Structure formats: C-alpha cells, structure tokens
Length: 438
Image 1 (cartoon, rainbow, N blue to C red):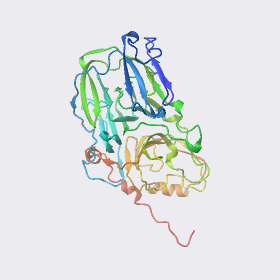
Image 2 (cartoon, rainbow, N blue to C red; image 1 turned 60 degrees about the horizontal axis):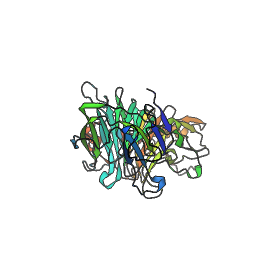
Image 3 (tube, one colour; image 1 turned 90 degrees about the vertical axis):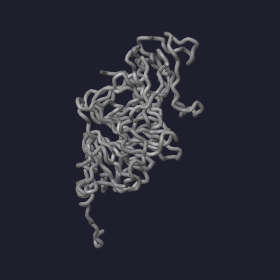
Image 4 (cartoon, helix red, strand yellow; image 1 turned 90 degrees about the horizontal axis):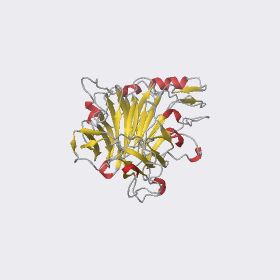
C-alpha cells in the first residue's frame, strides 16, 4: 500500500501519471488540443488577483471535465450542520468520552455518512468561520466522492488508517499523521475497519505555516516534511452511476455521473492536498524556567485579517524533554480570549492523566477557566525537578480559534458522550495559602 509523494509546503509541483508520459502541455496551460486528447481544467483556490505569495491554483489535465454531471439534488445531512443555535450556549468546561464507532453489520457508515458536527462558529456564506467535526466510519466510500465548497478540511485520524484518493493522486494517512483537503478538491476515503478521527474545517482562509520570528529560518513543522500525492488516474466507467457529493453552504448535495472523477492524468500548480507526519515536528521548549505558551507548538495556522490572530491554529503536544528549573512544568491555569478544543490521538495528556481518553475531546470556551486537575497539581508541585521525558507515547492536539464556538445538539445531547462529571476533577484543589510563609 506504499504511496509515492513529492515534498514541500506550497511548492509549485508538476506531476504526470507514468502511464502517459508527456501528458503535461509544454510551455502553456491551455493548448488548442491537449496531449492524449485530455481536457484542461483550472482549479482556483484564491482570487485571480491575489498577491503572488497567496495566489493558489492548479491546472488539471483530465479525461473528461468536472462539469459532466447531472443536476445536484439535496442529500440528507445526518449530523452535519452549521446551525449554531440548536441549543442554548454553554460556557462550562466540556469533555467528551471517546466517540463510539457503530458496528458495521448493524449500521454501515462511510466517511461522509459518519460526519458529526461537534461545535463551530461563523457561517460559510460569509466565508468566515470554523467547524469541528468528528468522523466515525466502518466502511469505504464506494463509487462516491466528496468535495467541500465551503472551505478546507484538516483531517486528524485517531483510529484506523485512511487511504484517500484525490484528483491529484492517493495519500495514505495513518494515526499520528494529518492531511489537508483544500476547498473544491474531490476525494474518496477507503478504510480498513472501525475508524475514527477529528476534522477542523475553516471557511474563507487556507492553512499556512506559522511565522517563526526570532526562532529563525528553521523549526516547528519544516516545509520539506509536507507531502503531496503524485498523479494517478483511472479511466473507469460507472454504468450504475457515480455520486459526486458537494458540501455547499453547510448542506450536502449529490449529483450523478457515469465515470470516475479521478481521471486526472497530469497536473501542475501549488493548490494541492497534502499530508504531514506529526513525528517530524521540531519541538521548541523552555530550557531555563517557566512554561512557554502553547503557540510554540503550532503546526499550521489559518490567519484572520488581524495580525497575529488566527481564525484557527492547529497545535500539538508531542513527546519532548522537560528541563525547566524551579518551575511548575505542566500547563498553567488559564483563562483565554481564544476557544480551545482538544483531542487525544494516543497516550495520556500530561495535565489530566485520567478521564481524557484517546478518541475523546474537550472544549474550554472563551474565558472559561481551565488547567491541571488536582492530582496533577499535587504531583507536579512536589516533583523532584530533573530532566524528564514529557508525553512519551502520547500525542494530544488543539484546535484553537479566535471565534466563540457554539456546541451542537449532537455534541451536548444526541451523542450521549458528554462527561457530566468533568468539573469534579478540579474540586479536590485546596488552598495552600499561608500568610506567615513566603
């Protein structure tokens, strides 16, 4: 199942299926007649007139153009939504137990039918906002694909690997890896058993590497470690009908066509899907004293129009060394002007060894206080401060946003996974104040 890739974040890539050498036109994008009788189609990920550093587009050379389909018809959305007023706002600290994956014989779910919106803010028509989805599935997408007209999907598999076929080629994405499928890109997901994960959807902005500032030219997620698929096509007729699903203005629509959409023989451009292995993240940490802010663990950011403020950041908490002297080493107690959604891919999160489980999640909303539980505080306050490995065998992550996220009815009620005792983890915290001791 090994796949081939090209490396580099945001690069101008060129790829053609080796079965059709010379499929890319030479010296121009749109010749009168394309090699092999292909159609030229441009996929624009930015306005034509965007400055060059942010201008994104790719040219696809395909057997038939994407326009060859029957009219779109509404498709049942299930638990996918962008209606943020289903239930009253809840400012409490929220934690979810691992989301359940239905058993295949009783309830077959593929990637699309297994999408469940947990929380979000903003809306796709205004091209500003985010949504956090959980996906649970147990069967592969058969003769159907999805594309997102609303924004970009950052996909974080937690259990089970995903073989994702895109118009640009195939990507194998395993737990501890992520992938980004950008706006408009058609893809289909093959799974190999019970599968679960998280999705950060961003409307109106694309993900970028964070600026490094005084860190310098290297560090965090290095551009060379991002992988882009190579061209692969199938010239496959589907007499029974192939279903193309569009997520458009928060709703799903389906159109029928009689051929596979993965018929791109060659392509070039800088607007592509990509994947990244979280093990490649170069961790920055405090080596003297104090706990650095978690922004030093940012992998990707979707910037807002305000400098330094993100619509969404994707942040990880990878294995690393803790060496700070005279310091409470776990995360500090915090109230934040940002919303913090956390998930756990594997292991045990350092600030909450119990209760926060792989496949579960937590949401600490805007200005809602949070921090280490009582057990963590007592242990870390008395620990002998020696160099130690932190988060060994663990990978937690955070979707952080400047938007105030609302939780859906599915998240608060229908899923039946909300941990109503979460607040109790802080109840044993006690006062150590002594006015006679400094």
